[in-house]
Amino acid sequence: MARTKDETPQVGAVRRRQVLGGVAVVGASQVLVGCGSDDDEPLPPAPEVFLHGVASGDPLPDAVILWTRAEPKGGESSVEVTWTIATDPELTQAVDGGSVTTDAGADFTVKLDVTGLTAGTTYYYRFEALGETSAVGRTKTAPSGSVDRLRFVICSCASYAHGYYNAYRRIAERPDLDLVIHLGDYIYEYGSNEYGDVRAHEPDHEILTLADYRQRYGQYRRDADLQEAHRQHPFVVVWDDHESANDSWSGGAQNHTEGAEGTWADRTEAARQAYFEWMPIRDVPDRTVQRVLRYGDLVDLIMLDTRLCCRDQTVDGFDDPDIDDPARSLLGAEQEQWLFDELSNSTAAWKLLGQQVMFGQLAQLNVDQWDGYPAARERVFAHLETNAIDDVVVLTGDIHTSWGMDLARDPLDPMTYDPATGVGSFGVEFVTPGISSPGFPPALAAVAEGLKMDNPHMKYVEVVSRGYVVLDIDPSRIQGVWYHVDTVEERSDVEMLGGVLESARGSNFLVEVAEPADPPVPDAPAP
Image 1 (tube, rainbow, N blue to C red):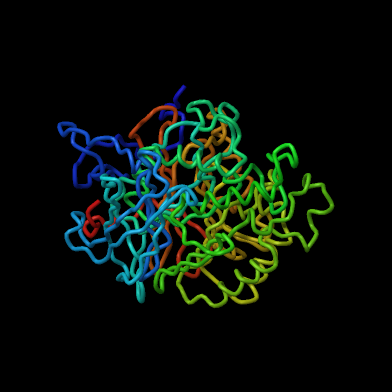
Image 2: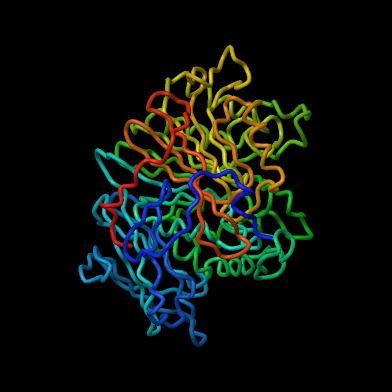
């Protein structure tokens, strides 16, 4: 049964209405529907070659990744794909183009690293193959130099089996985003009806092989709402556990049986290969996802891998004596030092850490988070304190719920942390809910208030709804705005405003504000 609006704490719930080519602002929520077709217009023919749409990602000031897949029509062993990138939606002002050949070795995917572009510029692109033309995609390069404002979305956890991607559609409809940051669990590995039963999986069994992972990505990328989010905005992505298997670490996973399901090394190699084939991420020889993307003097976006790279195995529980072992790590020594170097050398106003699992304390409920690696978290705190590094913002997915937190060593000790002034806080954390993956049952919605009362570092908690977070960033503050959808069990265009928190430059703590910052819609490029 779909959840009603009354079951979710909300502010400013609105129903979207069509405004072709423009924006309607109703109360506190922004509404844009300029991405679809008018009801009176005939629908275009269904694609045969470009079944999986187009995408872009990893923007640099002078480059961006363009992606598509060319489905063979008649058993072709290879497919030649031509491409064009331009500064206008009609592609009459082309700046580059060419052709590339793809084949089964890349699962017929195409990924281009287009260089020589202009910083902070919106571009439009298209592919052609086997007599068919793809949809036109829109992307944007990163700015350089002095940057006045940025607007990002963070999202994660899109279980296809749990329902429809209404949140992806709402993201697609926002005209003014510079970037979508996807924090993992882009796909799920389970078989049909093993975790969610609204939509069946392809293949219907748990995915183990390269062919399995490729087929699962193919199913997800046929979803129209996900395609539209990719078509409208560039993505920066990292994996979490379900791109391989539940509760994964460097040497195994909770949902992997060594031997009966092959070797973990073979399974993760297949998962990595399919991920780099199907995602708009820049290729690197070792197929790692940790990297930095710089947005002028305003943001350094530092993407981390807390899963497959170097994570030590999770302990059995909080009473396990190994939990405090200083040698245990989520990042591994090399990545940890790399992070510390990036933080120390950054001259950006804001240092954003895009990673997978909750950094702030959650009352010893989950050893799969940073709570299960306290020595590793303490090393981060020590580095921030020793080097007087401010304005660190941790971006988190995984937990399918909404949280805004101050990051303090001991948030329950009033002698070392003051939630009213931020004394003792070393940064802040924004945790995005799932796109479709389930949070707490609606009957437990009230648990959020209890958590806030018992944990003063938790400035916002909502544990039921799905959705995403908009980050609005300028040199003086970073603002996080939670948006929730009313259901995933059926298609819906209802979106509700959740919490609005911001951190002032140099303060390292969150405060609640009345409403979101006005969107810079007059300057938004055409969708």
